[in-house]
Image 1: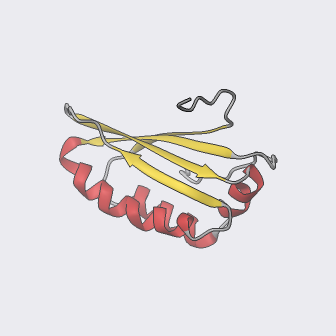
Image 2 (image 1 turned 90 degrees about the vertical axis):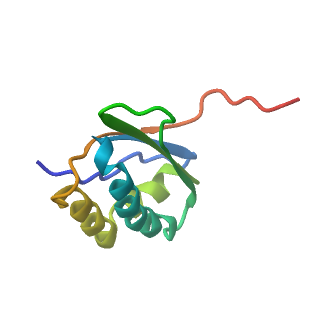
Length: 117
């Protein structure tokens, strides 16, 4: 099974990627380290705005991370996910024998936004 994620949003509107990663809690710190290599590659791509990896305050046997990345457009994300260096990094992360990762990617567009008045 391939863990590659190729975006095909085909939109010039801003998009947000929300991806959940679940790892055994004793692998959580290692996952954070490995994840950063992959995130740095994407951060260098045109159209990248911001990325944050969230870790829960309370943990059980598994830790569910939430990754949120913002892009200037879906087309910029589409191009970035075609980067071979990123694909290689992603494959290394999922092939790491010390990590047992499951993930659920999805791409969203903003439909409601509130700010302080």
